[in-house]
Length: 324
Ligand code: TMO
Image (cartoon, rainbow, N blue to C red; front, side, top):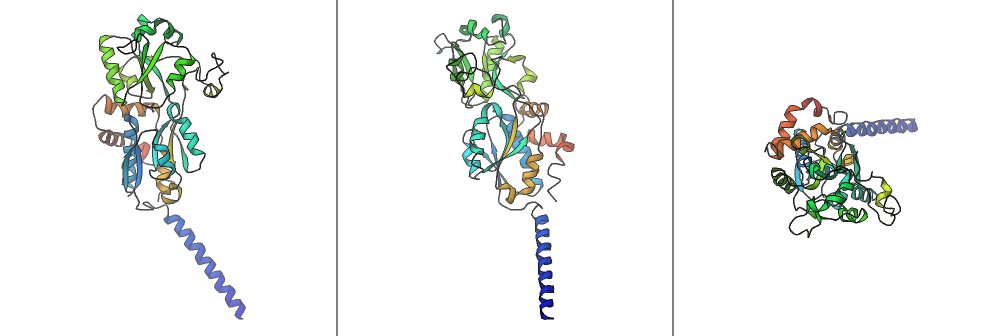
């Protein structure tokens, strides 16, 4: 008799534990699962900052505390890895693949999926340059007209106006034996100032640009077609037309655009992580959000609110499967 009672009690306890577990897993996805602020990274180009604000607004609507933290795309990796910041909405293959893969190996950051947008980051010129430098966009043309791109200080070599993001441009210039120097601007916006100055005077310029970006909706131009990118180009000197140097190729043409998160989000904010996973923009949307700022003069936050207002049907279901 006694033994039977114990069994009975055990069964009730087991059922209670099961029910509590079940309830708590439901509760854990009801935002905000934690009142700790979610720290969203902003970098230094417009679409990234607008999308960071878009995500922040959606998180706020779900009751999360949020903070924006401005970091360079170089500094962000160690901080994401340690959980100091938690979310990055635009990781570009052309400029960030190597850092992303290196830090991923330690297991503390998550690949939160790709946007539909396909990306390209490379040397770019406005179309009028073709008049004086025939053969473009093929890179060989740069060999013949390097001097047209000379600037005060470039000592007769062509000057490539590089972005402030880490790219092995000097290595490529050496590997392809171009008479160019790469001179980076300090802030991304300065690229458009340089482009505009050259454009007004129709002076040859070749500069860093990317797609999707707002530039393609306001200026005519093309990317330089360097030898087609393949992974071994960056690691195997024997690959490609230069048999003793790496980087004798362009950047990928159909690059990915990723969202990345601190791994701890899985336990701390499962709903917020799911919203990030579901966040998905295409090329048109990304150029549009950039144009709102760079062409139309809105603030990043204003641009985010405009995008949210105009695209409710797109973002309203982000996270729906997990956030209750
Ligand atoms: C990372 N970026 C879009 C500036 O090339």
